Length: 205
Length: 200
Image 1 (cartoon, chains in turn yellow, orange):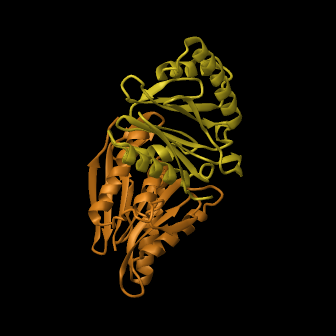
Image 2 (image 1 turned 30 degrees about the vertical axis):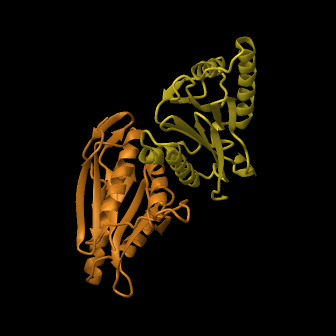
Image 3 (image 1 turned 60 degrees about the vertical axis):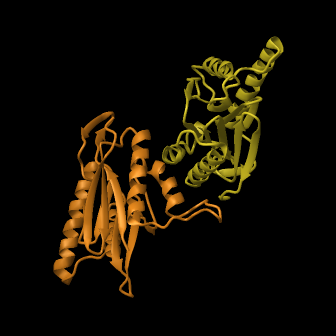
């Protein structure tokens, strides 16, 4: 079991029409032992910017805390919430600082562009390679399972209702095939005027 | 009363493609096919052995092996090499008559040392994990709410699903692609179809 599979996670972000969704599992485990079943992996970094983190949990805590520090300073200096693309670069910079001794955790960021309301999904590896994708992205121990089912079920320009259904089915079915992820699921649907958080009933094993 | 199996036809070694046209699904008997993923050399060897054993059975008993017997034979063949495994991830699919004379479709999935199980659907190989969640959702109706529509699995839908999962696997797995081989098995025998997949 490699270091990035030590705690287990499943994260997927999907873009719709003027909306974006981020879904994660809620298992926290130490190797094959499940320690918590209501573990929150999603951090709100702006009014329409939500970041989920996959991988080693201790690094998830460290990276998110350091990021929060930099974000707070930015917002104090600039006196405004951070723009998504600026925040994406902030993450890249933080992760690449540790290029030769990396954090074992990678974020998946789902955001709405404040100017035109278009969905933005930022995908990273653990050393900060940023790719902004316009369909979906998956990370964690269930990456392969998620990619397979998302590839089949995703289609462009889904409205928020359909996006919620699709992302939920993708996450639930993918995490069921993965021993290290599951035990519940949380879905955030981010739209221009509201953000909805839903908790799904999942297989508890 | 029918079974469907899909596979791809690319043979790769590292980052190179050795062949775009390798058939991974082959028949054993009239109503049974075996699909093999894993080490191609061992796949070919195993298929030869299995075919020979099926022939011997026919000569000895005067009737062909049926599907569950083939599955059992394969399990024993694989376990006989428990300490130097045949690196072949097999799937056996076929139709057989049950005690009432009804034709039932079956799929058996294996690991490399012969542990097998009959399941409603199965996916194996490098891209197996990409394909299986969708099949769980659409064939076994897992994680669908009580009000969700459970579309019955007709021939068109099954073939469509196999095409969809092969396309999805091709998109996201570098070793999958070129052509998809889809095999339909019912009581009248085995039919084959080929679909084009991305060649990159």
